[in-house]
Image (cartoon, rainbow, N blue to C red; front, side, top):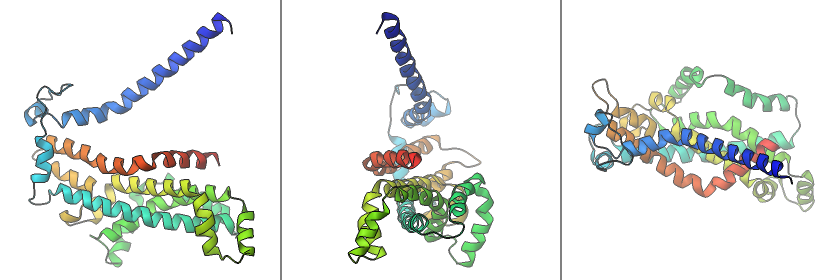
Length: 284
């Protein structure tokens, strides 16, 4: 390679690295500001004197979150509620996605491809359109102010995309494997759970993590369908730190930081499978 060619290659590589660094700075700046701001005193926050690193770092806002046991400000309860709703949503979504994807992948019926495409088309419409119909439906089922009702709503939001994603994994598995198992006497249940699911594990894990993340950060349905403060999830609970009279900036920032901790602890063990599932699902 000539000297001119090496210079072009090094220049291109340097530009790529600079672009990545620039993107990371833009993406991480709000997160860093929230984390650093949560370690400033209330007086500094009210005067917008946020310094990096903090001059006099404090954890008073973090301790205040768990000391406050009055009214609706029960941050530890918000975390538990979000875990309950998120895990329930993930489990139910994976079950629906697996069964739905298997049916779309292995059984031929009229309108199969149209139904598969509609699963993605529904995401074109804003979620606010289903707020009133979902409220009416849950009211008739007596599931308003219930975590079960919120799990059903969150599952309805996540299941179509997850079903489409898992189907792409099922389509890539040769049908000859199922035929061979059927010859040996295995029924569809054993074929699905002993042969298909282990091979499609990255896609199923991706569906579960996606549903959990969607449920964890969902605000609109949580704040409208859960009336009791002790049942609120984290996004709805954090809104209590913002009132018409004042905004408790310290506890709001600290709560935002702590909100990310459980989801990160859950996400990191499955991060590789999650990314692999999304990439393979897109390629297929």
